[in-house]
Amino acid sequence: MAISNRATATKKKLLAGLLEMQHEWIHVSVLEGGTQTPEFLNKNPNGKIPVLALEGGRFLSESNAVINFLATGTALLPEDLLQYAKVQQWQFFEQYSHEPFIAVARFIAKFLGLPEERRAEYESKQEGGHKALRVMEQQLQQTPYLTGNQLSTADIALYAYTHVAGEGGFDLTSYCAVEAWLKRIRSEPKYVAMQ
Image 1 (cartoon, rainbow, N blue to C red):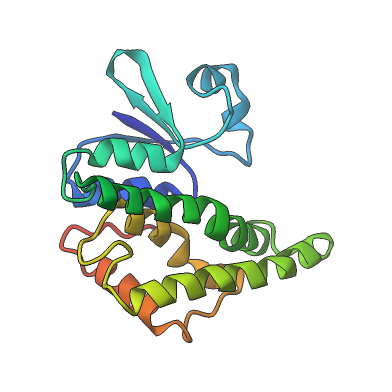
Image 2: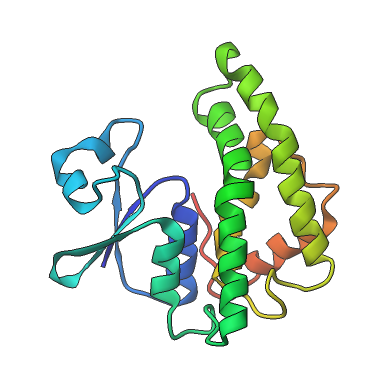
């Protein structure tokens, strides 16, 4: 299997480490137009990463679809229908209530250098990002992981940008349960840190 990556590579790298999966990592740069080449567009016509290349010339895109596919049949993706739906609930939350604020603010600050023409957009992301962190804090005050007592792909999905939220201007010190959750994930025996 080969995985094309970006900053959200954390999801796939962490999952591969936790499950001790053999894989080949192929870097594709969005900033350099790597996702718009004819070769890449043949793998994902949407021109976005990540893309999981499987045997037989098959490809799968969208980060949460990829991690759920890879985690099927493991303890990281529950078989119980309601628990599985809760994993998906948090993954939709990540895509629509978390990533658009925290990841975008981080991109503007870290990768673009917070240019003046994007400052208003950066500042507009702060309220939504803190709202997402408060929702997570509320849940993590009740359970050690987002769906209960077991680490799942929901945690992996939300760990990706939460652990670097500070790079987008989000101070996590007032989110004690979120910080404890991040530490729990980093304490996993097969945790893989990102460079």
